[in-house]
Length: 309
Image 1 (spheres, rainbow, N blue to C red):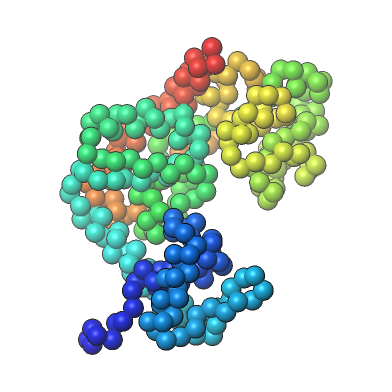
Image 2: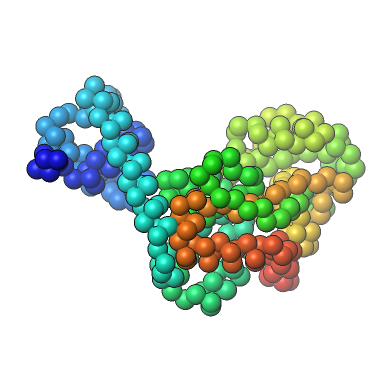
């Protein structure tokens, strides 16, 4: 191989790839955790190194040139290999010192994970636990996280998954709000209420309707992807929303909107097969599995009730 012909910096190529995928220098900077001028300089440096034009200005945005479009697939392939190299290297680690990234939903990150994190710190002080609190699915293949707690079984053959438990969620509102709409006792009566939704896709509405509700888009005057804000709306009487039963039942500010309405929520612990061979990832995976196998939402609810009191 003629090594002297590889005359560009991988960081510059990565900046080009992320800019192409995100659509702008500013969005790429946010994704990379850097600044817009830095990304712009890196892309310009790659253009200079390769003596090509990768982007052209279209109005206030960027568009790939024909050359940029052709090179993009090659850079994507490089990124995939770089990610695989990182996964394999992480999987070969036998050290218990270093980071482990855990992707977990916002509610679990705030109310369940702290107790587990303290135990991991106490038993393995060399491990740095990086908690990615998100309701979005983290890409384990791209090393966005080492371990993820999910509510469904993954289908990717490269992922290792362990069923931890089945939990329950249900609908809650304040007693005052429920009284204001006639204290509904059936799904049809509760369908007159105002609900707090997760997003504008209508997925939550469809799921509730599949369980016997009769909701329309007009039933959702509040939409928020942040579960803490949702719970504040619910506990302050804005309408009806969903919460894990262990937490909602323990909060004296609300009550179940319908006694017989239960949403089953499975809990799966997931990791990439290659990363799972890392000793410290295995340690954190096993500690999480053990801790979450109990009744973590009930413990979280007890802590919340004590805090409110």
